[in-house]
Length: 79
Image (cartoon, rainbow, N blue to C red; front, top):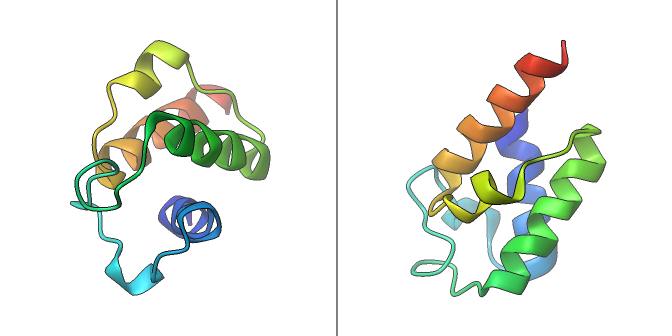
């Protein structure tokens, strides 16, 4: 579910094919996203999942899998 939401936001903001996105996909290298793109993706995910991610943690994310793990961790704390 988290990966699906993240993919949806990536596709929406970067106009890429969802089938090209895996957990190993890097935001900057593979998706050619800049920091503003990543910020918009994270805002969209936060809104969709009703969570709040720490900015310092977000800065450490380099690929989709790391983003999924961070989101999972935040959602676990929310329970």
